[in-house]
Length: 262
Image (cartoon, rainbow, N blue to C red; front, side):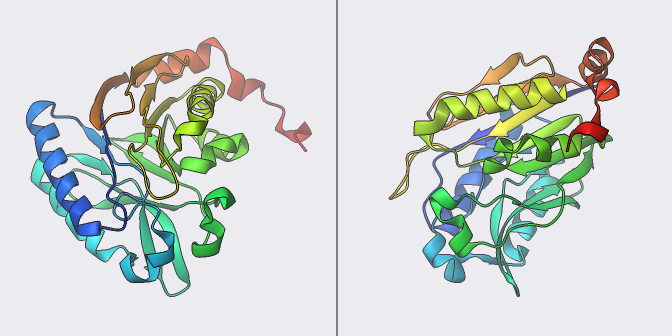
């Protein structure tokens, strides 16, 4: 089974949800008219950027506005959307939450960032998630994680040992640590023998410059497609049969010794 995937890598407008809604609506329309992907992926905190000090004003109550917006786009274009992540306001605080929509506009996955990045003050303004990011898309087991999560290989492995064949990563990864981004993504693909689809942003906010380089990587660690540091939509096609081929050739999941991993 082949799937065409589009990662919308763009300059998130800092603290301006409506401008970001308008930009994404235009980009999805253009992408569907030109490339007709099966799955569209957005970056982390794409509605607000890292305007953390204003989250009480601009976070989305239970994700309702964003979810209505993405639901309509998914249905209109009959496309699956990994809706990056948003600042979701709940009664217990604000979470950094990914929603996944199928072609009918139904929510098929939800994941809140488990590991909060203290270097960007996330722990001061956000509540950490408490559950895994597993979901099924086009009948394929998959998982979603957010940015800093990729520095925790045991967290990624928790998803692939339960069957995930595609790992979707959404991020606002800074330019100074670009080589970490590339190396970690390649490592996660190789060691888990899965596809990695990673959507980063570009541009800057008052405190950071972002590195772009959204990537689509196959289970051997071969880069199928990689963006640069400009706003663009990265397109790549994945062949899901390769996951099982690679896992049979080097059977790491059979050869694991989890009883001794303590």
